[in-house]
Length: 126
Ligand code: THU
Image (cartoon, rainbow, N blue to C red; front, top):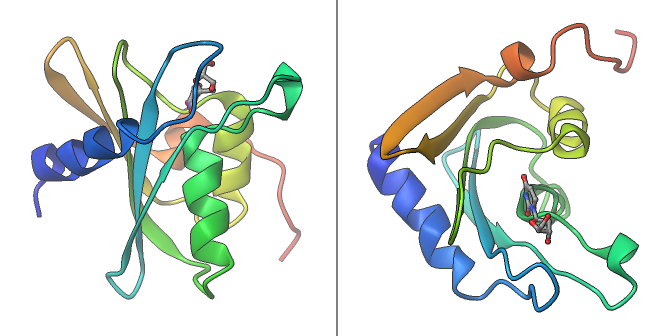
């Protein structure tokens, strides 16, 4: 699957986003090392601070299904470009700082390594 198709997959996930407060629908698709694809969307809450980004929803879904290494994540939204926020970068970096991150900006696909988006990150000492 190429990056365009992968972003389309994340876009489809936007449709089931629960975002009555911001009205920004976000979808994410995550590929694990064994080739499995997980999908997730942002889920908001009346107490705003409990809202969760699509990237962490899909990450926690995958980790709770036994996956710990990931090769790529795509993020898409109904209204704007969505490079992952700082908190999601840190959460993703816990598992695979080398993963590829793709999103669309003004019709162009952007692809970056997570460690380019979060340089000098804090992590488990190995
Ligand atoms: N959001 C995401 O799901 N991912 C991002 O990378 C940025 C922001 C969500 C959180 C919230 O539900 C809405 O977008 C507005 O911030």
